Amino acid sequence: MSGAAPAAAPSPARRPPRKRVLAPWKDRQGRFSWMKALVLAAAFVPGLVTVWWATQGQLGGRPVMEAIHQTGLWAVRFLLIALAVSPARAVFDAARVILLRRMLGLTALAYALAHFGLYILYQHGNLATVASEIALRFYLLIGFAALLVLAALGVTSTDAMIRRMGAWWKRLHVLAYPVAAVALLHYFIQTKANVTEAVVFAGFYLWLMGLRLLPAAWRSSPVALLGLAGAAGLATAGVEFAWYAIATGINPWRVLAASETLRYGLRPAHIVALCGLGVAVVAAGRRLLRRLTDGGQMAVSRV
Ligand code: HEM
Figure 1 (cartoon, rainbow, N blue to C red):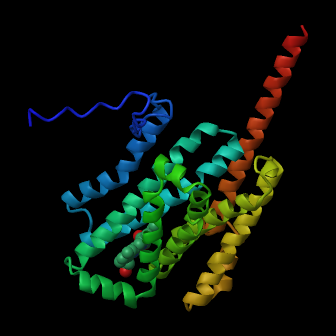
Figure 2: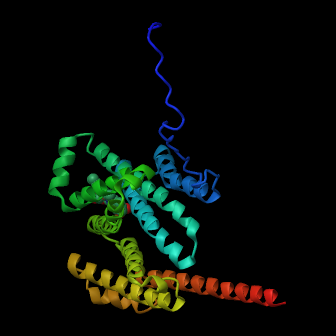
Figure 3: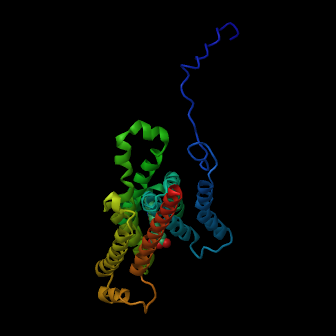
């Protein structure tokens, strides 16, 4: 060993650039970001709460199944929140929120993987049973397909993969939208009685899709957002009607009639329309504020 010539150290010019791995709470410049740190901490909360409930025996008679439900719900919630990041940037002109998209998408994947892991546990680790259940039950099959695509999106979400894949990266990552639709279908199909939350999620999803279809210049227009809020509310009522008509023996017209009044409390269509209205109001407020500050600055510069 001692006789071997020491390997020549690569000259600084030829040394490959050191890979920069940023901590998830730092921004692209490597500075601490409160926004990222808070969202990262929040991402852990539902998982930790579920573990806490499990240790306290608060997950009911079928704790593993209840944990499957909790992780599935949070996977869909984080997926929808991740999809809402780009629209939030456009509507509120808030460029920095884009830093959160990857973290939120990976959080959705982490909950979906935990969901699948718990399902394997529920089947006592018997992978043959898991595989045959997935092959036999349509809702499990589409859940599995959604998980595979989510995993592909997660694996290719690094900066190095973005550079390496070029234009293909965008093409692949557009699949996040169909994945969310498939995950929602999985949610609907397994729901036994109350589909209220699934319908609300579907309504938010349709609102997001509607926003994507709007011309870019309209996406922060309060009038367009107001129209979108109404359209998303109607579409949500349509989804609920269709679900009851196709999948249940309940009269869908009676369900629809419940959305025409507030006598039965807020129905999914109201919740989606009200949230859409809230976005339109905030966008209008921001526009007004910008006009006022721009006007003030012009007045100062004239003086
Ligand atoms: C291999 C993949 C998957 C398997 C085996 C699986 C399995 C399951 C099972 C067994 C349930 C409970 C059904 C019941 O109560 O009878 C469930 C519910 C659910 N899953 Fe999955 N799932 C998978 C993928 C996914 C993915 C990728 C998502 C979301 C991104 C998801 C979201 C949900 C949701 C939201 C629920 C309903 C929770 C509730 O009603 O409280 N699942 N899944």
